[in-house]
Image (cartoon, rainbow, N blue to C red):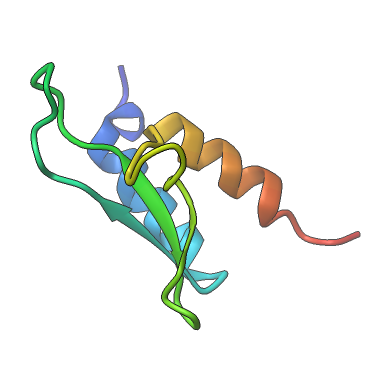
Length: 78
């Protein structure tokens, strides 16, 4: 397994990518019921509103969900 596949490396890469589009990835560090760290959400830097990861509950998106959303919603127009 290469270092670029570690969750911390993926998160740093995704945060840099999101920043290019005026977005911030937020992480809930509280421990959930099963002992797993919290989920993630995406916030728009201009309005400070959470635009993804807050439904059905706050910080409900996984790292894979965040990556998929960014790829689908920030692709350059052709």
